[in-house]
Image: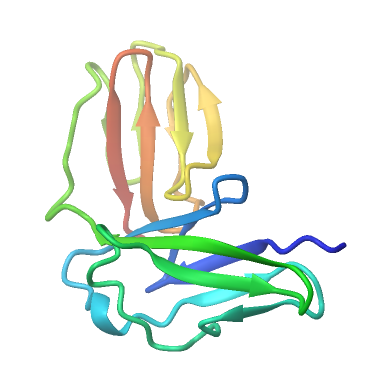
Length: 158
């Protein structure tokens, strides 16, 4: 049998985090996004696999934080139900600080040579370094910088 997996689930430009084992899909969209008419773009594994609701169909996720929206993936014989939760991010960027580390819009300054890990908004590890890290060539968006003791959320705007 072919896998009934969701390869990607993007909503309002945000790539959701897909858990193929727990059958959950979660995304945090920008504050102010209208959760009642979101149109997720869904990519599936398998040529004859379909999903309901269909990719691109306006769907309300207004109450998905308490009651997940079910997306059923099927190949006509077997099916899997993914529980989808879409929430709005917190207003503004919650900025925890990592002592001695700063971000100037291009380079994560790390003069103390802390062991830093940089993750993209989908939680993928992009780089690990104990030096300053230039992310100016990365796609714009939100990145998470983690040290042993703290987390820093940064926005690459250009």
